[in-house]
Image (cartoon, rainbow over all chains, first blue to last red; front, top):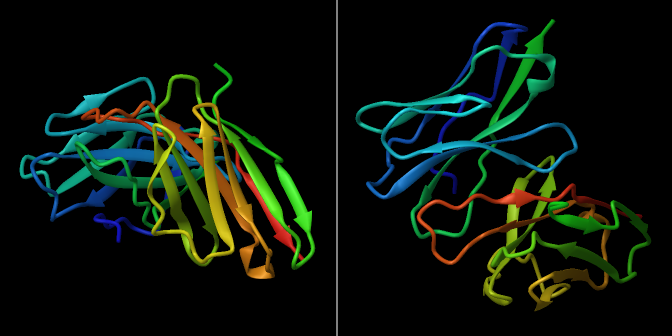
Length: 110
Length: 116
């Protein structure tokens, strides 16, 4: 079973920041938080990952709470092309497998 | 690199026929994964390989499904005989592997299978 909990869907206005929450209250010390997204009919795509510190790349920012029990993925200026299902995944440092939950379906509104 | 390449992109077959899905991982990647996605069950891991060796096939639904990886650049997922409930999108993914602390999976475009 997936170790994360996400809202099933969210709306965000185009041009605004999209903030996607994820709860992972049972995360252990060596487990990373990964985010992937799946645009309709395509394969999932890696976005970002983090362990303890906040992370930023060209796609998004990842904010992890100090107790590591939750995190937020931030898309700073959402566009229509960001409409997708976003998966938050917890994965151990030596685990090969990814267990996908149901994710959050993000709708970007024009 | 062209990424993970899957073929065919679409497959339509009749119940009882054999179906073979193919995957070419990214060159240099040591781990390969097969997933199945349906509306009801979401994205499920079927089997994965490390260095061409099957490591975990606990997600393979039944004996009608089999997967092979004869070399580092090719894998197949075979369904024989196929049934309508096998209709789904099948994804292949690869990652660099070798026990890295952080590893990223790269997915192919998928094969949409319809069993009539």
